[in-house]
Every structure is written in C-alpha cells, then in structure tokens.
Length: 168
View (cartoon, rainbow, N blue to C red):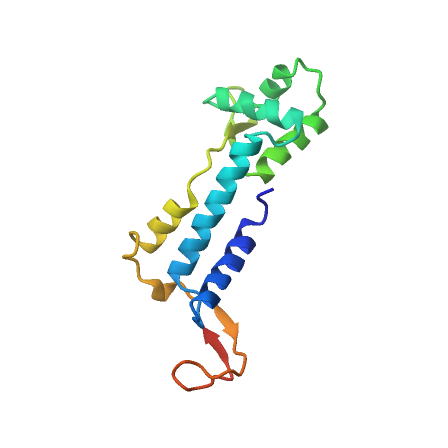
C-alpha cells in the first residue's frame, strides 16, 4: 500500500514544482511531498493497522517488539513451538526486513560461536530526518538540494534557453 516511497515523493515534488511554475524542484517542494506521503502512510496504518497480511510475519513482529534484547533464530523457533521450519522463519524475517520492521545484528555467543540476533525496528518520521539533514524548518540552505532534468527547449523566466542539463 505504501511501497516505493522515494519514487512517489519525487513525483509529488515534481508536480508541486510544476504548479509553482518552477524549473527546479526545491526543498519546499520536497517537504510538501513528504508531508503528503506521511499523511497517506499514516492513513493506511490507521485503516489497516500494523498488519502486513502475513500471519507468521505479524506474529513474529509482535514477538520481536516484546523482546527488547532481541531474539536469536533459536528463540524465534521456540516462540513458534519449534513447529516452523528454518525456511518459513527466514521468509517471515525477510518480509519484516523488506518492510523495514526488523533488523539483525551478529554477536559472539557465550560458547564463542556467531549468533544472529533480530530486533524490531522502530519507524522514524521522514520529515524529522529531512530537518536534521537540511537544517531547521525553513532555515536550511536548499541550494544543496538539487536535481538535474533535461531542458525542454522552452524559454525560461529570464528569457534564456539552456540546451544542457539544467540544475534544479
């Protein structure tokens, strides 16, 4: 429902730039697009909840969220009463990883072997991330946020025409 966020946000930002008759996608267009995307994502989460539509992945996510120290694959297998195979567990972990809901880390066990520990990931607010990268709201230098598009041969607002790729 909310896949391909980057592509959708760029499409929205481009539309906002066109509506402003701007030849470049600026930081304000990106911020507006991110706000619309966050609204859509929050609406989908409100309507459908945290459910992924995969019962095993949903149950595993709940188990990972309840274990703040994470879970090894053995602990995950034990959670399912040892009734799920490694392939099924791997598939469910892959679903969670693909959706950014879980992450793994490797550690050394007490016996000296490598162990994989899985943790639930907590989704952050994309707009806060952009604010951290680009400075405070409205105070960041948008000159570092540029995208290049080929020119159309149409005269720009300064009366010139650029045959090269234009910086946006």
